[in-house]
Length: 242
Image (cartoon, rainbow, N blue to C red; front, side, top):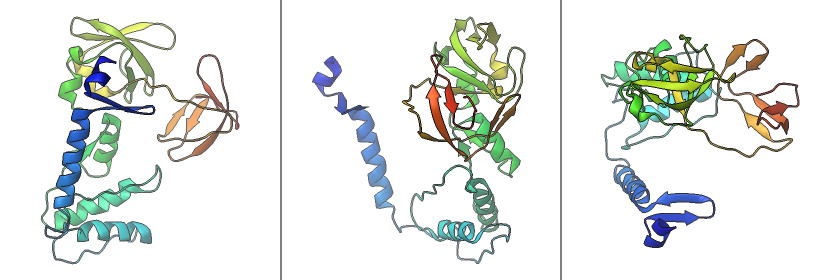
C-alpha cells in the first residue's frame, strides 16, 4: 500500500506493475518502432527455396521473416502448429545467407527440443549458471525434471522447501524430501507456483507431451474440465486427471 501511494507500484483492476517495468517496456516499444524498415532484409538478397516438407502456410511464414527489414519481427503460433519445423527451416535459410543465428528458449526442456532440430547452441533465458547457485532458489518453487536423477523420475515435479548449504531441498508428492546439487541443474526446469481459476466446462490447451502410467498428454490438445477436487487436481470430461 505504501508503494502504491508513492506511485512506484501501479494497479489496474487485478493487474499490478511497477513504474520502472512500464518505463522499460515503453523504451523497448519505442526502440522497435524506430527500427521499422531500417535494415537489410533478414535473409539477404538471395533466393531461398523452402523444403517441401513444410506446409504452404509455413513456407509463407519463412519468406515473411526472411523479407523483414525491421529491428524485431515476431512469430506466434499455438502449441502443435509447427513452429519448431518452421524455425528449423528458417535457421537453414539464415546459414545459407551467411547470417549467424542464436536460439534461446524459456526452459531447459525447450532448449533440448531445439538441440534435436539443429540449434546446437540454443540456450535458456534462465541460464544454467543462475540455476546452479542454490541461493537463487526459494520455498514454493516447482522443479520439473525432464531427465531422471537420484530422488526424482522423469516428468516428476517437486516443490522446493528450502536450501541446505549448497543443495536444494525439494519435496515430492509423497511428502519425501530430497536434496539436489548444482550438477543436476540441467535436469530440471524451474517454475513459480501460480493459482488459476478453472470451472466445469472450461477448455484447456495442453502445451507439452507426456506419456507415463495412467497419464497421457499431447502438445496442442484441447481438453474440457469437468471438476476440480479438494487437492486441486483437474478432472476432465474424458476421464483424465491432472
